[in-house]
Image 1 (cartoon, helix red, strand yellow):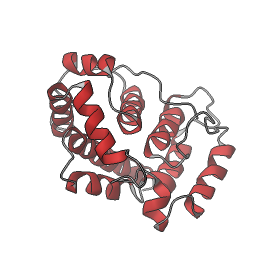
Image 2 (cartoon, one colour):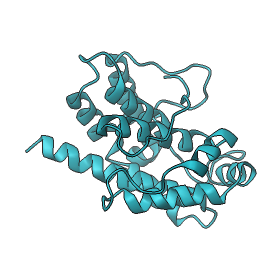
Image 3 (tube, one colour):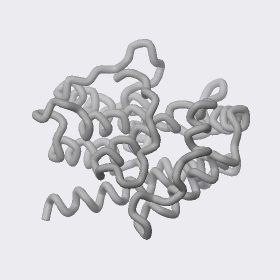
Image 4 (cartoon, helix red, strand yellow):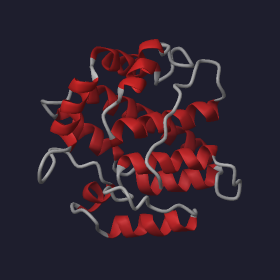
Length: 209
């Protein structure tokens, strides 16, 4: 998997699948690195209303837009480094294996690598992060929604990948971020992530009924 590519904030009126893919891409960008000037400029002009007024995502989307408008590249970089970077052990881990097993590079990562291989996805060797980084998982979901290979990019593959590799632990990550005293802008990122995961969970629940 390559590093996250630039995304456009999906406008109101776009298709539901486009909105899902773009939101996964946007969240991937915000979890992999602090926003640059270009992304913050997009937030300056982003609509503050969710595509579906009154939906579960409206309030967290408005809060995310506000948080990104109230930060700067320097402040965001400092916050990101305080939470997820630094020398040695970071304050907050963003890897699925840590939340699922208590350790990095454990069995959940091996399972994920097998599933990614079956989907035709591979790690970008130029990146230090392992495949269970939350941003890479969101990029995989984005691909499964928006990719052209219908044998791979379909609802059943999305459902399975989300159930196994995202749903079991992403809420714990959000809890950890929101409880951290240094979290500011990423408190809004975490809440947006939590609510989006809840919407995705509900959607996949309906598929199984």
